[in-house]
Length: 291
Image (cartoon, rainbow, N blue to C red; front, side, top):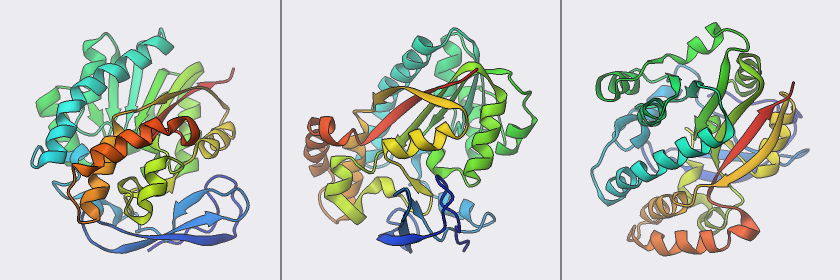
């Protein structure tokens, strides 16, 4: 296990314990989430070593890598995905005239295919070889290993998308610096992450599925991500709700509590109704790179 010694947002060194959370999905191990004493950012600490973290993704339960349709929750996830893919492409098209798109953490390639079908010239980066192979075989899109991020030409990308990826990035500040370098001036960066300030996060506490330790290394609120991206020359332009996520996350959370998963539909609806106060369960932050 690796201990994080500096806060990923403000780089201070003093933290306090916030919550202990079980890896409900795969290993049943318990991990600790801490809170920075200085800026209030929450992150998993300690975390698995770089040569071990991949083991926590090797399961059919991890749907973004497997496209598993077994069970009610996964079936509903795949059913709704067709709707959300169209929404994502529309959001991106509304924010850029450029065609050169990089999808970081492209998984099984579903978004990348939808984007390219709509006219983008997109490629993906995905660390998991099985997910890359699925993307090549089934969605006919080009994705490379995550290391290729450092071989892309400076200023060559019009728009970068990270759909529920930033919370997984092991070398957070290093990779954000590289993202800044390869994106052109006034280029757009789309980051979707869970919102730990949401009503469903507060309701489910340690059972909130979007904590998803240890795969989720960081646990964001809107102020956290805004402050972090300021360090890398990005201004927040827009926040877009991901309204379906509250239902999916709440259903998983009910399952983790040992209850009937469809009860989460009601809780997800309540979370959306309370979003004006707490924000949505997941949100997309649209950033623009300064000149």
